[in-house]
Amino acid sequence: MMMGRRDLLALLAVAAPLGGGRAQTATGRRGESDLWFDPTQLPSFTGTVERYLPNPRGETDALIFREGPQIVFPPDVAEAVQRDAPRGRSIIVWGIRARSAPVITMLAFAPSSDATPVVVDRFYWRLGGRLPQAEGTSLQFSGTVKQPYYTPQGEVAGAILEDGSVILVPTEAAKGAADLLKAGQSLAAAGPGRESSEGRALLADRIGPASESMRPLAGPAR
Image (cartoon, rainbow, N blue to C red; front, side, top):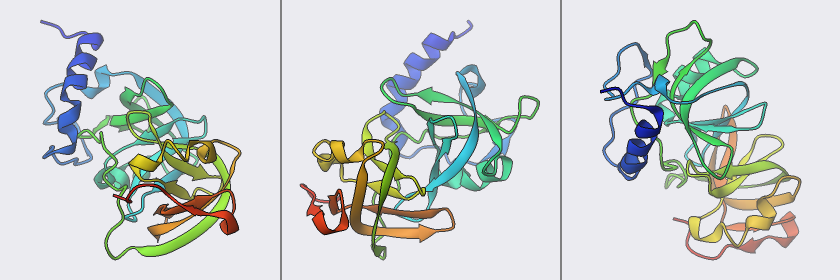
């Protein structure tokens, strides 16, 4: 029996809560996959890579298209994605788009329509790099918000600044900080994080429209 796209998406929705557990390792390999379905049956999204985004652990687990959407993927396939699609190059992504926001969970990718897709063998449903490592550096920076930073489900989890810096906020504080995370807003934040070749990212414990007016965020940063 052939499985239609609607049926496949419904099954993925049921499987979503399992994605943060002991999922299959993402290998970034071409050709056959261990997945029980073909990810290229899913909707495809084509765009030009504007930049890759770091997380507070110093990993790369997202990119943004020049056209706007954010793409999330497991950190262990970042090298393969960057190899196929450096900044300024186009990429085709097969995956799941959130209902409420322009964010896509990558399940396969290819640099062009005539290339064999690389299959991502696990679902990156949760922001695994949201929490910094214990040895993370205390960072503080500010700038203008380019666009919100989204969870794979489309919830606002922070902000991407115009220079590509990433400010994430604790889950329980996101709603209260929502006005500061909108595009065009001035934003300053401080908290633990990391700087990497892709830029800098932190999990905010203080936030405000300017460095001198930052306030502690409600709730523990966990």
